[in-house]
Image (cartoon, rainbow, N blue to C red; front, side, top):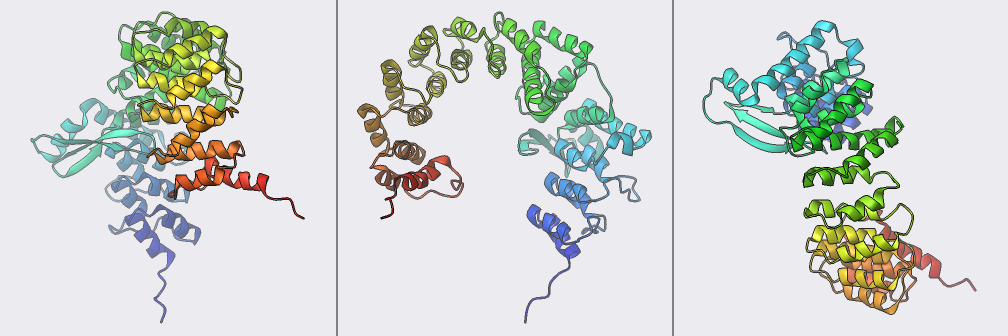
Length: 452
């Protein structure tokens, strides 16, 4: 006898409780009520929020769950998400058009709560709420796929230390524009670029396009603290992303600004970020800036120089090539990695470039070897020395290096291709759409016998 089939609502509760996101989608598609009561009698969106499960919360909200549902205690899923300090949860439960949907009093309540946590601090607020006086427990967690945030626990309560980002997000979505200096002050205490509080402030600043906002941002270039200057470079990186991917804004003003900045920034970490953002676009001064910094004492700067020296879809000049070849002997492996990547081109390799790549493919650092192998395999070089180097890579312990070598044989229709792929060995999941794997199939298609 077949097991009884649970209705979609029951299965939805189970899916949210176990954080089975695919099942949550399936249940909603099969007609489950997105406001189905969970284990505590409240809609399952509350269950997802309490578990810091932003993915289920987002699926439920997009599927019609009421993120403004107010139980007798006067809270809502969105208010609880703000209280918990997870920007990902807040994004998931904010719903459509919050500036228009939510009454002014509700918006103020959300902003006040986020600002209270931001100004008081998670540890102090948890001590106030729990009465506990011991040390808090802290750990760094992923808030979503891209951002990290601290998680703070005390007296049986746990929150995430993303209230600064929550406040910044709510202000932006509600049309509140704090001064640039205030947003910068929220960001700079967090040195990691992907920390959610820093990233959110920078990303929101990148949307501020008024002349006054740009004037205030540009002034950060001369701030005495390197952290503020690095934040400006990150904001310009976000502006480039938004300008090229989303709102199609003209980024030429920013590129010129970065070119001037790259000439006089004294801090190595900041300069490295300036160059990183600057090379997102082609600029006529890139080679000169790259040559200027090729011998910079900070390896983080030198790692960005090769990207200045190789124009997009063009061969580097003789001076740039000479600088790249010299940097291939840099003691920092990160610099050698950047050189190996930028010597890649589907053009004919000069003898000097070929010898340099052959040296790098035997480098002691595995990352350098991998990038050099990729550059060589992507070139059209079929000389005996290069083919011998690929054959030698098939003895490497690193399977990715063996795969890169096999790909090189397939691209060149070399009769040793099948042997090379045999040497690669079985590949695990995740390689189904890898171009190096499909190259083997294309090799056979090109070289199959003609029908009689």
